[in-house]
Length: 221
Image 1: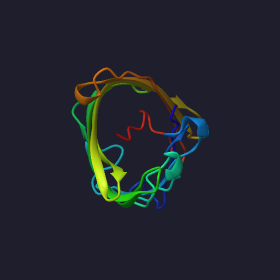
Image 2 (image 1 turned 135 degrees about the vertical axis):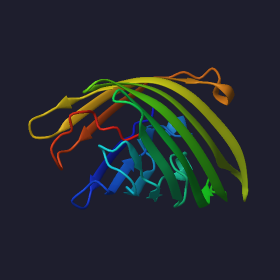
Image 3 (image 1 turned 120 degrees about the vertical axis):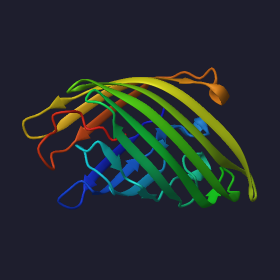
Image 4 (image 1 turned 45 degrees about the horizontal axis):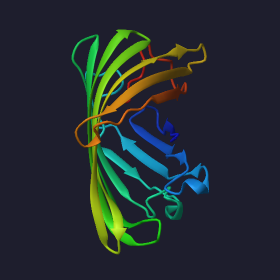
């Protein structure tokens, strides 16, 4: 089981500049006998170049992360890396939005569980349709593709691919102090290289009141 926790905060008067951290995982790693533990921690900076939460088109093309983790237990990449992301949101109608995302990650000195090193690359593509059925209820249909390298020997890597389709719902609870809590649940299903995989994804977001709460669920993409 993996658990992910992210906190994202604006550091100026608007949400255009945002810092965040992600506690990437809590799991047993590649060595089940090691028990549970923390995985990579990611520090992230995002700059909103175009639009905002109320715009029909929003574009945030810059993102940098610095992961750390214990590669000896299979809980991390074993080295610092850089990630670029191109998330785009387009409002099609009052009730329908579409989100697009493309990203790549480079880790120059990744390590496997036995300490062998190599440079790894990965890229990902995501697309979703978001139905704003109610101001505080969304239904989503998502497709995510990931292709990444893993270190298999000294300066040797191997590519793996994942393709998932997911149906998801999320809803919001708004509080007088501006806090918004957004739970959600999804049912991802593997297709293509991930055929036969099934799962359940639980989601819980706390949108803190740096300004007055929005009338609709904040859609991060």
